[in-house]
Length: 435
Ligand SMILES: O=C(O)[C@H]1O[C@H](OP(=O)(O)OP(=O)(O)OC[C@H]2O[C@@H](n3ccc(=O)[nH]c3=O)[C@H](O)[C@@H]2O)[C@H](O)[C@@H](O)[C@@H]1O
Image 1: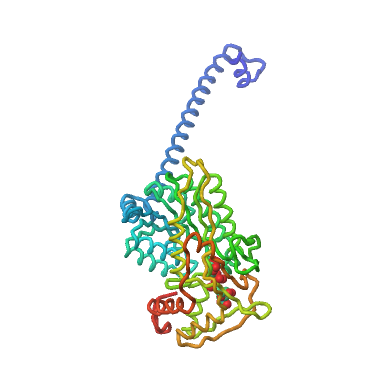
Image 2 (image 1 turned 30 degrees about the vertical axis):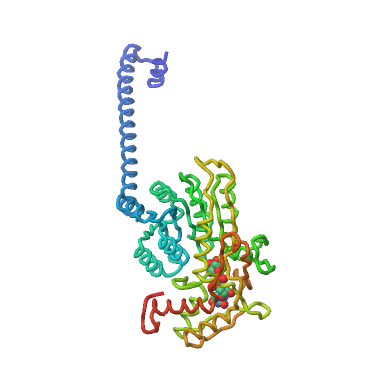
């Protein structure tokens, strides 16, 4: 019946033709057709095989090119990681420090290493500010036995590899897109690092065995338009003034859910305008120093009503003590196999200095140490994310972390200027390192 249909289709009934011939011809044709169908089938098989081998070749090329071009991976790399993570004191901790080539990251890594903790750094060396300063910090860390991995917190495979290689007890998460006003220019970088990167890191921490305790950098900027002084942890933080602040506030909420669902131990530290040697060139005290020395004008913002802006400037050594105390008092995470066994610790602390100083007063101190008069342009604060003042209440950190800042702005800037001049040289116009 089937044959008939095929036959009829191939040989439409034509009056006058002899039936038998038709049948033979049809059968020959059918076999030819069958042969061509199997040839087609073979061709298809060949095509599938070729495609499969092409795809596996591609994936081989991808894997090996990643192997040859990635800045991480391999036996030598793993050995460096393990050596850097080695703990050299009783009850020492093994800490993954993200943003280790950053300002706070470098100082915290050094402090931990000096007392015998294991420290592995992670930093993407982005170009938000001069990466040569980050490289110099990396070299400083290397001199103290701290290895900094060149990689991004958004790289889930790298994070998984790090946690596979070392059973970190703690993560000091300092990698972030910093700066309040730059968010106007590059909003996506804040979402990339402070939101997406944070989630990728927390995912890795939640899956790690053991789960590490996490201490991370939030910001005084979360207080935003809060005008109740001094700022306490229980004050409103739902009116951020910049995208930067909003992403840090989002970080506080995001870390909360990882604490709630997976039992990650979380401590958020709200840093208040941290300054000091090896600092960030994008910050006012640093860029003012550079411009004053180069004879260039500086822009000093003022409030709309002509009032001076003020910050609770906090010296780096005090911040480092707060970070280390937060690590030391952090309880272990309580999750295993991505399941929380019992509630885990969730804390937030202000780390400030408790004595705000106006920006013009900051400039006067710099002028004195640099022995150069600043050329000041007084400008009304542009509406680009700044807040008029910050002022920390640190009683919670004092009570629970033993945090007690000891360096005022005068003393701290003296140390900064000394470092600046030794690092960049006395006369910027006479040369020196790039900034
Ligand atoms: O405390 C914080 O959480 C934040 O502190 C700093 O942010 P900010 O206080 O704005 O620090 P600077 O950029 O150094 O500005 C300090 C003061 O100088 C003022 N300023 C800044 C730049 C400038 O050219 N002129 C000027 O008068 C600012 O308005 C501000 O009042 C850091 O840059 C943020 O990354 C950090 O999160």
